[in-house]
Length: 147
Figure 1: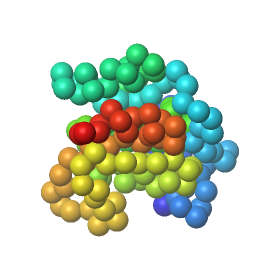
Figure 2: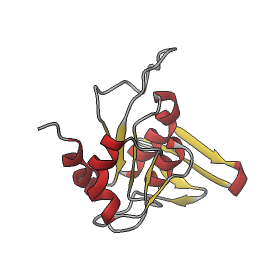
Figure 3: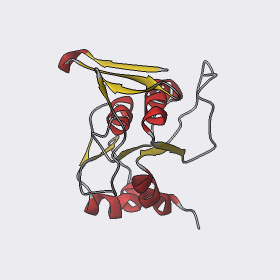
Figure 4: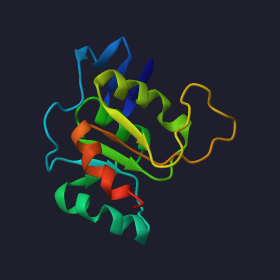
């Protein structure tokens, strides 16, 4: 179960696998359609390698940095963003929002070794990922291919 509250703008999201997903009292899901030119979220700043890697996404979509990887992921869960990418985040920053994303029917794909979101170590490593709708993740996948 994940609970995500944003006091400054009076938003709350809650849910988890098997429990459903709610934006306040409204039932929510990730965006059901194909990926659009609507916003995606990314943590900035991007180094030169990742900027070049993400160029096709940057050309196709409007990218916003909400200032929080957890917020980008939560917004993706409730359909406010197509998806998000973060290269410098720790697992404790995304654990609750990942539960929301799972409940809403979205995906989270780790760029490195998958990590457990159930047993968080005291000194977690950085866990780069991309997440969101299936179409967003399918569009992003070849951008991270090492082949």
